[in-house]
Length: 564
Image (cartoon, rainbow, N blue to C red; front, side, top):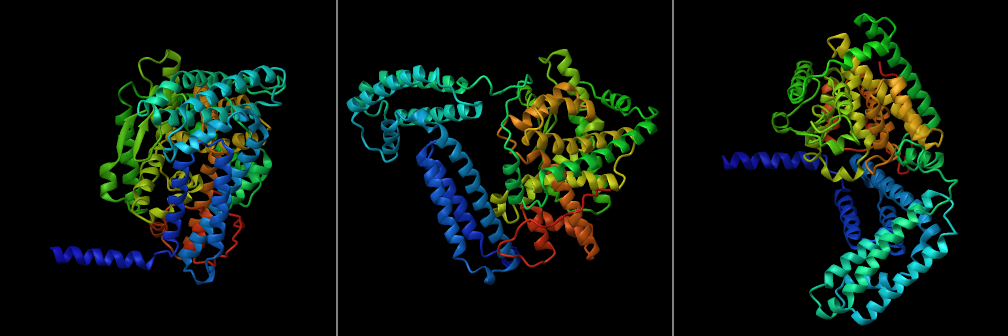
């Protein structure tokens, strides 16, 4: 038996080496170096942080440039392009933040001594507690003076006010960490510093709050929706699209989305007619919303949908779903707090089920139940579990995990959305109500492209985005509000995240069609994607189709925009 196991291990090693990339160690080193610096330079809003990371990216550009690209294997060339692109992207985003920082860094011009104390703490230098107490006291007085002077000198917009506030909050967190390091361990430090630190900490809280609200009345922060976001503008959108190897402008993507949106609307009308509602798709959608299950039954409903989707997929031999993956996925119930940001269930290693709790208001309970009815959930259980996110997570830790640094929603969300497109085309829905449920989510993903880009282009406000989801897609109001809040007011969703679902899905669908024309089976395509880990789909295409990979590859693949 031991000999048999050893033989298997050797065979696995040989297979792994046959597809190994020469870039693995370099990519792992980049990830490790970046992590090490982030754990050392913890004051994210400081001159020190920005300068150190700009130097870090410049150093890595030189390391990349020193590699002989032409000697690399196809896998190595792909990884080279991916790492080079990642470094340039992260440096670009850092420079944007640095420019915003420099415009308001004067908010902390009293803090040189405080920053020195934080830096010296990293190597445990014993401070002169008496002198440090005096420094803290002076800083507190300086803040009081700055507040007085700034009351009549407001920031021109809330963006700058918020950035200034973040500088102070970042300093405050670092001061707390440094203070706690010495407090109680150095008696002299504790004797001198307890009162000055406590008093300065209180003043910093006051100052950060003051700065956050100290902007011109002409700068609109809230359009009445209560959702506070920060549009990035057209130039930044285009730059971000280039880093994702998407060769379309925001306006072209909106046009593509509107075409798909209209297709979905026509299919919804067709399903509505099958249900007996004629052209009144809204009435048909109301019918579907009322198919919700009673409280306590939602987990069982989700399990039934999962069983059907896996049976449907395996019967057609579309992809390999390992038995242990089917054995080990889990369920949790989403908290009421989380449902305010994300009203629908989410997935990954486990599926997080969104359904109302007894403490919610009557209206919120109904909106949650209606929005998570089995027909709406019909296309998204497989999106979250198999062959969607759970299978992605399962396969990623087993195949080329070093590529996790190339994480992109166009691969992660695009793959799961691709399966919704593919299954629709294979007759996945069994009833008109299931068709309506699939179409509701399809049109929702089209709407995400439209409203998120119009918001980032500063053409729409959050309230206009909410209204669009309610009137044109058919969302419950609370669910639409939560969707928009998730899109713009959390760190969870970068500017391109919401458009990545449908756009990535179209990329995968176009790549599938290209490979099927070359003789691949669907299962070969799907299994290969799961073994390459995540990356922009355009780079995956070069690998799978064994195309030449240029050292300075730029977006150029005009993938098909038809999904039926």
